[in-house]
Image 1: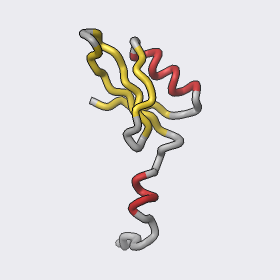
Image 2 (image 1 turned 30 degrees about the vertical axis):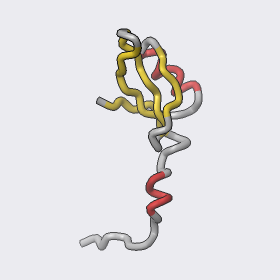
Image 3 (image 1 turned 180 degrees about the vertical axis):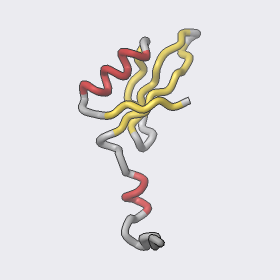
Image 4 (image 1 turned 120 degrees about the vertical axis):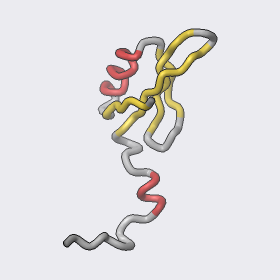
Length: 70
């Protein structure tokens, strides 16, 4: 049986996990228009893009992995 690791990852490290590697894309409505908001892994808003497919392509252009948020 595996024992859980203790004390190897700080709360700060866990919070920042993936900040440079992941971006989250969420559908939003801006002035009545459906758009896609892009967020860093820590929740920092990065961009609002009119088309979802373009949002995913933009994230990949910056060598980040896009993830969908519902």
